[in-house]
Image (cartoon, rainbow, N blue to C red; front, side, top):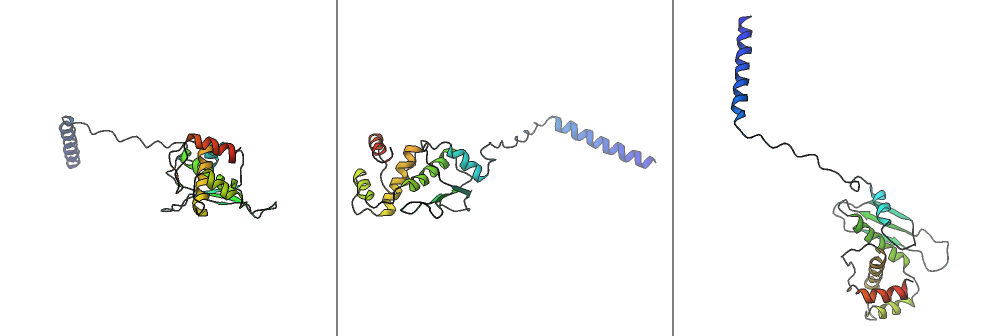
Length: 185
């Protein structure tokens, strides 16, 4: 019995020595608070698209499929517009690939861009009019002027966003006003 009491006293003395020795040291900083997650960060891809779509002012809406972008993927969206001619159409829709790091405004700009592709007429007579209005060469390829059209649309109807994703020069405010009146009224 005596042996047990001695062990307890020694252990107690060691603990007291530790407490006294630590009393002179600066306290370690408290651990950081857990990172606050925003309401946006808690949304899944379809809910983010629904939220971002509210920032797009154009009235036309097409069915939209939203999913997370594959890691390392760069494709932000695709549009599958209706073919030329009257309905019924096959399956016109937009697909949006959401990156976890995208802000609501960035995502809304992507959605507006894809809506621009859906808005684009499939009438070949339109092409020379657009090229002339944008001061683009008659030989401008469709992969260039179609992206230009979609970016103009996104600039007019999406949130203010300082990134131009077409291989052309973005229009200034006066040109935007003329394009809106002529092609998007």
